[in-house]
Structures are given as C-alpha cells and as structure tokens.
Image (cartoon, rainbow, N blue to C red):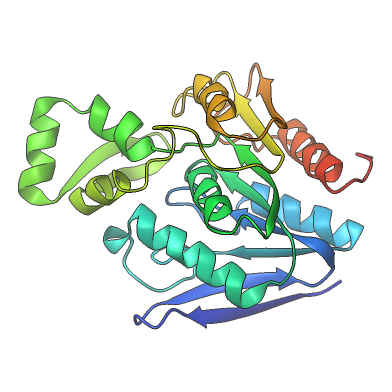
Length: 252
C-alpha cells in the first residue's frame, strides 16, 4: 500500500500538511499532541500497522505544527479542533477510529462530539482534555499569570527542548472548549492508555474521562512504568493491540 501526501487549504491563508493511506474501513485518524506532529513514533508506527493490515489511515499536522503553515503562537484549541474537522471532512469518508495523543486526546473528544455519526471508536494516549485550564492556568503562580496577561505569552521550561510558549489566547479559548465539566456525549467505545509515570498529565485524568463519557464501553489501560509519550516498543505494541481489537482483528 502506498501513501499519498498533500496540503489542505483552510481558506484563512494556512494549509494543513497531510498523509493518507488508502485502505479498508474504518479509517484510522491520528491526532498529534501539543507542539507535536505526524512524523512522531506513535503516528508512524500506527501508519505501519494500518499498512500491514490494509486499513485506511489519515495523519496530518495542525496549523502552526510540523509541515503545515501558520504560526504556532496564533493557535488555539478551537482552531486546532477546526483543523481536525476540516481534515476528516475533506480527506476521509465513512466510519472513523480516532487516536489522539495528549492534546490530541482532547481534540479527539471534541471531534467525536461534533461527528457522532462517523466516529465509531476512540483511543486516547495520555489524553489531556481541558489541560489549558487544569494543567496550565490552575498551576500557574500569580506572577506567571500576571506575565501572561501583560505580555500575552508565557514561556515555561520544557524537558523536551525549547521552552513552551503558552499564550493568553490559548488559555482563554481553551476555557470555551472544556469537556469534563459534565457528562460527555460520546457513546462509542473508548480506550484510554496512560502511563503511571507520566510527569505531564496525571494518569487519574484517564479515570475522570472514563467516568464522564456516556458510553458504557470505556476502558482505562494503565502502564505502570509508562511515561507521557508512551512510545517505547512495548507501548507501541500495546497501541497496535488496542486498535486491532477495535477493528475486530487479532493482535498478532
């Protein structure tokens, strides 16, 4: 099976880079995390998994991420969720299995709510819904909040490289897209993979997601020594087994 690539014009001057693998339904859609892209280990491992089994797959970069155009600092949860909807509406047909990593887990939940007739299953990998409020704003010191409000952006240290820019627009927009404030109207099967050694997103958040979604078919799979990325060979095997089960395939 061969992959095709392209760029999707968003009508606002930005273009989304995408890679699509034609194959059987349902189509697997990978949603990257905050400041991540479609070339990471989980995305490429999932692409290889789908190619081996003949399943269709779509992966793409949000605006301001990876190979897509746009400025990361202009991005918000609402804008990136709109990117996801635009990509799946333009580039896929039929049922979908969403696989969202970290922030991509939040985007996956928003997408499933917006397209309940198409999303037949959802997998979260260290899913981080509402992180702009719970993990950013609520954890900021008063001085950090003052800097953010004054300058419009706050740079915080990151163990993954350059400091992470957090914008005032990201925080304010995120508050408009919170999903865990009440029942979450998602009724498809949901699988939540989370490492208990995750230093960025507490694993207890997976339990809260499972509690809030309306589906009865929600399972939390904890990896005791797993970190936030869950991209070790054993983690990728677990991801493949999880998606295979949702596709009705065996895990070998």
